[in-house]
Length: 148
Image 1 (cartoon, helix red, strand yellow):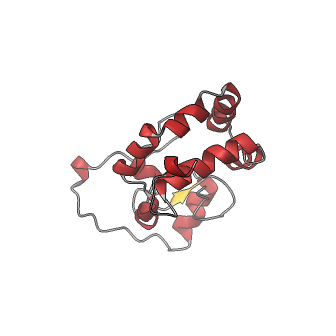
Image 2: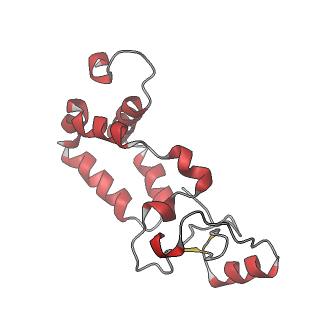
Image 3: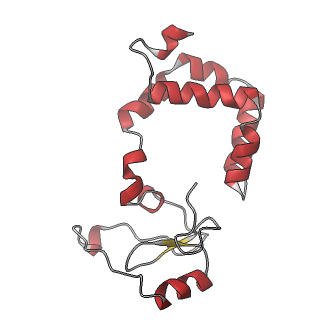
């Protein structure tokens, strides 16, 4: 979960149009501008072809808003995501209505960090998360489905 680049306390809703730092409120934006830490980034992509930055909570998040240059290394490649979709073990877990309800509650929660922490107390959710991680980052040479 990413936190505000200014106060490091809240989930950011906005992004500075100049330096792309993420911030949570007007007061954090003013503090950011007042402390001379805003250094515009050099763009290699023309502004006309860049996605529009998120400016308020009503607009949906896009990948570029969620992943800045520092977190691009955490992005899961499409091929690995396809492995998740192809996993019969995951499909079996997802047939469980309790797991689906847990996932919907995390997805719809206002405080996603707390919701995720609460969900991780449920053995079924932990099993699901572990299975996903094993598929994305296998710790052995065989397929994950072979292990179980």
